Image (cartoon, rainbow, N blue to C red):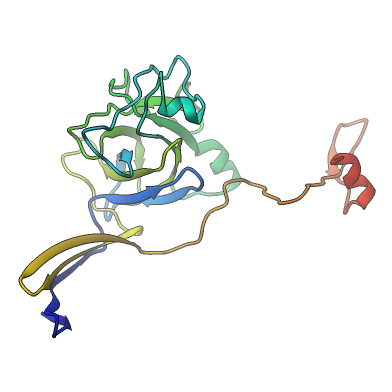
Length: 268
């Protein structure tokens, strides 16, 4: 027993840590910034990832999912999303998926896949499958149903399958409403979830104040990092780029640092 305040009777009776939990949990997937998750099994490989999500303040008496087929008009305005005809209390999750360990330009162009996870109750017609390098529509950029159900926590869930890998990166971002997200992974036939290492530490503590006991769990990033840029190029001012074009070959080359006149021409 570790006493924190003897006069107030505050102490903690048990403290456990787990460096390879069976899931990753993110309680604040925002609409204004991305979260990058490393999904890496403690041993072996994985070929299925399940992304589950719901709104940040769940209330099973009032929460509703979209009641409109996303094929009709999948991305309405913010006002339409929360009102008729959509009436959604849960946001869309944009998931960018990058399996493997190769991060050169060719691998990024070839292997990255994007999916939009839509909060409706109808199960998807076909499972969402990743296709490396040779995308088969609608694999990349697919809009897929979360098969949402208020009896589950989190409410909505999508499984993504891919060839066996020893790690997968996910870039997650909410659309319309902030979300809380849980991620699990497994290797077929998926009898149990894989222990995931390298991303989060699970801290499980039981505290006591006089005769009141309370148990809490928190997730701590193993390798904290700053915010990731949302764009390849971002500027608070105009951006000027000069190119010289060879009229015979059409080859473009860098024309060097521009003068102020050139920038004014390109950015009037």
